[in-house]
Length: 105
Image (cartoon, rainbow, N blue to C red; front, side, top):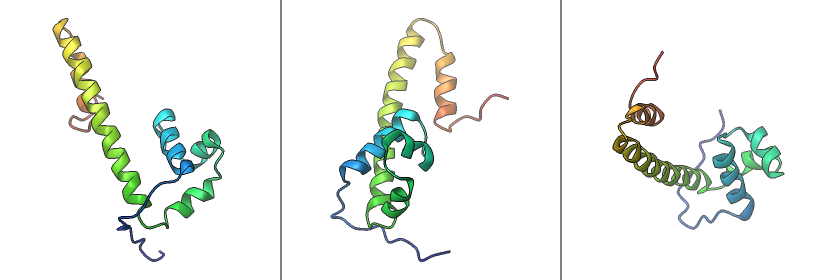
């Protein structure tokens, strides 16, 4: 293994390609460098380079957290609407998605 990457740069600002890469990851629901490279036109090796830039990984994780919280809020709203109509099936799916319940087998 290589040296650990230091990710504590408070001055990190993602560039346009980084933002486009992240948005594509959310749009196509994948974090595969090959898939994201095809979706964005940014070479996949660029992603591996970005990982060496102090602050990139922290920014990526922070963006994922914000997106997850936004998604959770939307899912709760949908669940409340469905519950008002007498359907609670959505809640199980949401809890499975959030990792709070094991998937049905």
